[in-house]
Length: 174
Image (cartoon, rainbow, N blue to C red; front, side):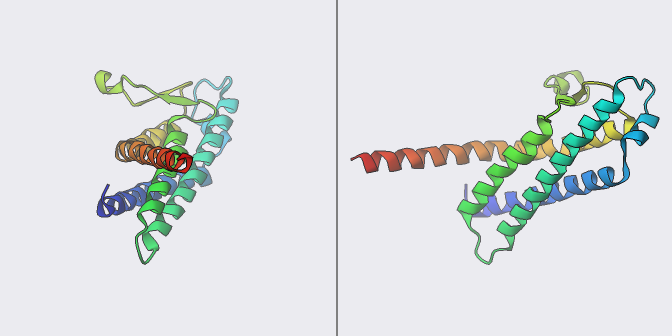
């Protein structure tokens, strides 16, 4: 991918990560398990679910913060470093995007049929408080755009790295 396109992708990624981390920080700073329980009709077993959910969101928040800092570093450098940018974008896919779609405690999952059924993209393990549900659905739009932009790129990057290693191994063997 040409350096200018990679740079544009870095700018987009930084904007989306900033948006996500701001939402997460705000939610996590002002929301607690007791507050979520107050919003819930059927509270049986929900305290543990909310603890797991907030833990997953904290992990995601940290991943977004680190990703934001790294991509900002890429863009701050006087001379744009294509290889470093590609590595950072690949890391962001693995740490931020995958962390969103595959939370550790499996409090929700992506419903792959949502585009055919006009339902939400996220299917929750239990019915969460509306504030939590809205946060995740809003974040899903951000991460869906990031995934669409970065996953293709990330696959291309991984392929090139593997090819370079293969070429290096072949030439050192001869």
